[in-house]
Amino acid sequence: MTLKGRQPELPSIMLNSHADVVPAGAGNWIYPPFSGHIDENGNLHGRGTQDTKDVGIQYIEAVRKLIQNNSTLERTVHITVMPDEETGGHRGIVPFVDSEEFKSLNIGFALDEGFTSQDNNMYVTYQDKRPWQVKFIIRGNGGHGSTIANGNVMEGLQKFLNIVMEFRNEQMQIMNSTHAFDYGEYTSVNVNMIEGGIAPNVIPTNMTVVMDMRLSVKADVNDVEAMLQSWLALLGDESSMEYIRRVENSPATAVDDSNPYWMAMQETLKELGLNVVPLVCPATSDMVLVRSKAIPALGFTTKTNMIPKLHDVNEYIDLSQFLKGIDIYESILKKLGNLP
Image (cartoon, rainbow, N blue to C red; front, side, top):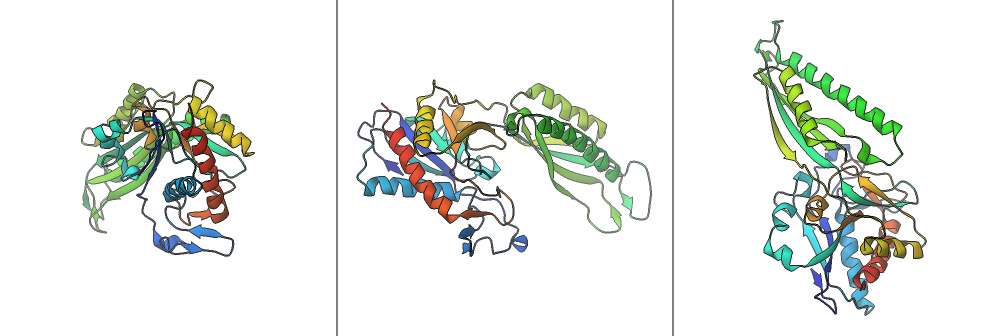
């Protein structure tokens, strides 16, 4: 969706969000995750309320208010809604940024989803951590469920989990020793899927383990690759490894006076009496691909004083915060859209 500016030849503003959400696991929610239930405290419960249907709707409503108030912008504004963000953007932002349509938008600056705050601060993310999602297929001896023999596949699984948890504990120590929100200093790692087995009385011959890593900004990809290969070697020649997702580069957008878009945002929020803190995004967004095209891009959300529930059960949004956020985006767009 496009709101044409008075000088469409100027670089445009991209307001991006994604429409897809992760599975909900409905049985664990207080309220059905797709019911849009509003509780007595004015909280709207549902999958996507924090990640990230709220931001997309706020964009639309902020632009609607600009039109209703006869506010004119010099720059053109594009609202883009991506599919497939949660699984890597391979059917969304990945092909889109290489398309002629994307080039024709003449984007000079982009905004995308941000990070929920538990205090009065608002966060702006200027760089994303690089996602490495890796599938290990651990192989070993099978047989009858009554036997106890060396080389059982579960021995390999236990060995692998021990290795991963040892590395995870090392990264947690780095996390605990650094500044409170310095997400870029450590690599996160979690085993999120374990699959295998065919019957209660049959020892399986293979187990599949899917691991999700988000690399620190300082991590060298060759070192990480060598580490994973060393883990694989410990599992034996029959085991194998494949990448589900592997992003090697994640450029940063400047958050200083060299970036007029950032300065405009910062000035607007200051005028509104709001404090904004720049940080590295602990996860990964579509902006990895946008920044790779040398386009400055920031992740931003107006959600404050809320419990972060991204990908968690009982995801919710405070409706008063949501409505206030529309006005904040309207003010930001006036400033960004009229940058000379």
